[in-house]
Amino acid sequence: MKSVVRNKNVERAPAPRLYPSRRRGRPKIQLPFVAVTFAMTVDGKVTTKNYASVDFTSREDKADLIRQRALGDAVLVGHGTIENDNVRLGIPREDLRKERIARGQPPYPIRVIVSNKGRINPRLKIFQTDFAPVIIFSTTRMPLKTREQLQEKATLYLSQARRVDLRWMLQELRHDYKVKYVACEGGPALFRSLLEQGLVDQLNLTIAPFLFGGKNAPTLTGVSFDFLPHSVRCSLKKMKVLGDECFLTYRIARHPERNRLPRRSFVRRPGGIPARKL
Ligand SMILES: NC(=O)c1ccc[n+]([C@@H]2O[C@H](COP(=O)([O-])OP(=O)(O)OC[C@H]3O[C@@H](n4cnc5c(N)ncnc54)[C@H](OP(=O)(O)O)[C@@H]3O)[C@@H](O)[C@H]2O)c1
Image (cartoon, rainbow, N blue to C red):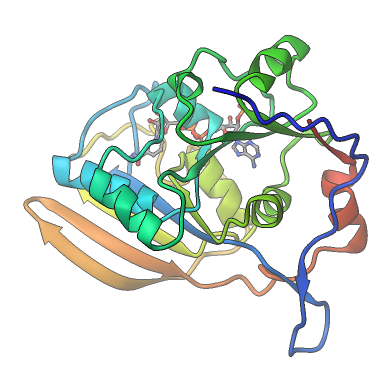
């Protein structure tokens, strides 16, 4: 696709968007609404132990995933998911594209990939299509050759920190692309990171009628042995049963710090180190 490469010599992250807070204390910052969509087995697995791309859900579930994606201004995936599933992240249904246009959205959401190491294969299918921009949030750990290849196909946001600061990423999406609704499609490692920072607002979860077992097969939150820093309260908003599958919609209680403006140094220098947009 034609790239939208912006060579900006940015030695600091752009200033955050602020809006007045009625409450005392630190001001609030606008972040997009983040809805995450997953399918899991009855024993909570989202794939098998070798992370193979497994198909364990119905056509209805796949249609539901596309409907959820069609709500987003941006569709977000972790590097593991795009590498394993090799999907284009489009909207195959014309009626959904028309609905988007009627809502004032472009026919397709922008496509966002997040990777710390940046070793993303430029031959993935997502880079062979140009129906919507591809934005990559990564770090300067991305090899130079990969950078050169990806710049032809995507817009790169590279932080000099070891890890991408997901809050900063959401701020950038809001600020630079007016993204108000992020449809995240996982995977588990990215979901866990978003949860740890209190950045998830909604979970759309399909329970599929299988049991996989296997302690090394990832659950919704991956394979980490650690607890989350705080337990996350989910309130069930909707439940639909179709055949043997159950479709659940949970609202995630907002972490008190979610919309707090990060400390000044954190805002200006995500991860403690300046960010660079290429
Ligand atoms: N059942 C479902 O609904 C469902 C949904 C999605 C995915 N999956 C499955 O899950 C498997 C992939 O699992 P996964 O855990 O590897 O997927 P993932 O969460 O998509 O990808 C993990 C990778 O994303 C990047 N990443 C994660 N957190 C990050 C952060 N805070 N900042 C920057 N980058 C971050 C890192 O990439 P780098 O290594 O490049 O640094 C990390 O290795 C696949 O088999 C896929 O099919 C299932």
